Length: 630
Image 1 (tube, rainbow, N blue to C red):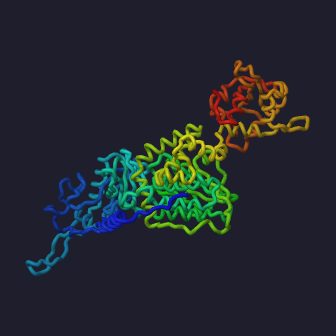
Image 2: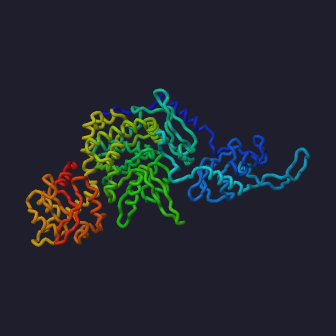
Image 3: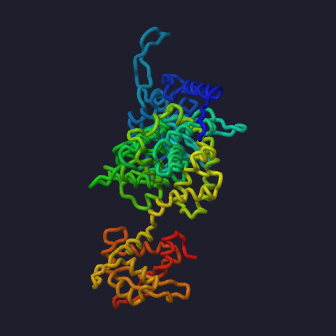
C-alpha cells in the first residue's frame, strides 16, 4: 500500500513563506520617481549628454530605462519600455514615445527637449518672469536616435528570439522559468540548490520581456517524499483507468512536462476519452488546479483562438469536450496545432493587411472527449490516449479533490527546476534505452518515455513501484510499458504500411465467378502456395496489379506483388485518400529495406509497367511482429 504523502512543514516552509514576503517588498519597476526635465541630472542639462541627440542613446546613469533591441528585416525598431514591456515602433508620434517611457514621461522630455517661453515665478526677484522651459518633445531627434541605435545592433527576429512566459532552456543547459515579472533559475549551493531571479532582459541571444504574472517557484527545495505530486497521484488513482498501473503516472508526468514547456525537445500530448459520467471534466479540474496560475484552458475553442492567446508563451493549454462535429474542422485544426507544438514548429497565418503572422508553438496540450476527432498516425504517435471506463459507483469519481492550488504548482515547479539536469541527462536517456530495447519507435519513446521520466522526477522510484510499474527492473519495466501501449501503437501505421493495408482490403470487383476476394486474400493464398502464379495473376490484373514468383531475385526472395504507379482501378482505390494521384508510390518507397524493392518492369494486362515490388513474406512477417527483414 502506498505510504501517506508527507508535506513540507517546519522551518523550511516558514523560510519559503518569509522569502515570498521579501520578494513582494521589492520595488515594482512601474513605481518610478520622475524629475523635473528642466533640472540638471548629475550636472548635465536636458538634451546635452555625451552623444546627444542621436549618436548615442541616453545613458542609464541619467535615468534612461528604455533599451533598443534592434530592428527586423523590414526596418521596424523593437525596444524595451521603462516598465520592461516590448514595443514595436510602428509610429514615432508623441503617443508612441510616451508609451515607451511611461510612467517616466519627464525623462522623455529631458532627453529630447523642445523649449518654449513661459511665465514662471522667480523667488529671487519675487515676481513672475518669462523663461525658456522644456515643454514638449523633439520627436524627430528621438526617432533618429533610436533608429541609429537599432542599426548598430544585430537584426532582431521577434518570432524566434522573443520568449514568453513558461519554461525554457538557455544555451548553457540551465532551466529558466519566466513568470512574467521575473526570470528564475537555480544554482548549486553545497548539496542543495539556491533559487535566483532577475528582471526579464536579453539573455544569450533571446529576449525575455515583462508580461502578466504567472506562478513563481517555491522558495525551498522539495523532496520527492514531501511533493504534492504524491497526493495528486493518489487522487488520480481513484479514476477507473483502463491501465491503472500506467495511466495515472502518464497524467502526472504531463503535469511536469507542462511546466517544462519550451525547454523540452518533445512535448507529449495527453488525450483522455470515455463516455458520459466517467470523470473527464473532473480530471481536467484536478490537473488545472495542480497547475493553477500557469495553465490556459477552454471548453469551446479554435486553433486561431489558442494561438492568439498563447502567442509566444510556453504555457500549457487544456481543452475539454474536443468533439468532432459534422461539417466542422475545428477539432482537427486544434489537433494539428498540438502536433506542431510537439516539437516546436512555426505557424504562419495571414492577416487583414496581407502580412503573415508567424510564431513558434511550444505548448503542451491536454484534451478530453467522449469520442476523439479523426486523427492520422502523425497525430496519434505524439499522444498518450488514456481511456476512462465507467465508474463502479456512477456519479462518484472518488473522494473530493485534496489540492492546495496556491502552493502545489509552485512546489512542482521547484522540483522541475532542481531536477532538470537529472531529468535531461539521466532519466530521459534511461527510458529511451529501456523502451528502445523493446522495439518501440523513436516517436513512441519521445511520448511515453518523456511522460514517465517526468513522473519519476516528481515522485521517485519507490512511489512508481507502489503504483505497479517495476522501474527498478529495466527489462520488466520495458516489457510492461511495451505491452500496455502495444494496441495504441499498432493502430498508428506508417504511411507506406497504411497504403498497403488500403490496397489489401480492396475487393476485386470484376471477378467473374461471382466471388469478390480482396487483394489481401489473393496475395495470402499465393504466398502460401494455395494459388499458382497464373491463378494469382489472372485475379490481380483486374485491379492493375501483377505478381512474380519466388525466383525473381534469388533463392532467399519471396513471392512479390508488383504495384505500378498508375492504373484506372488503382486510382479509384486511392481516390479519396492521401495516396491519390499516384502518391501511393511515394508512400511505398518509405518502407523498410527488404519489404519494398526497387522498380522492375512487369507485364500487366498485356502492357509492360514499371512497378515497385512488395515482398509478400517480408511484409507478412513485419505486419505480424513488427520486425524488419534481415
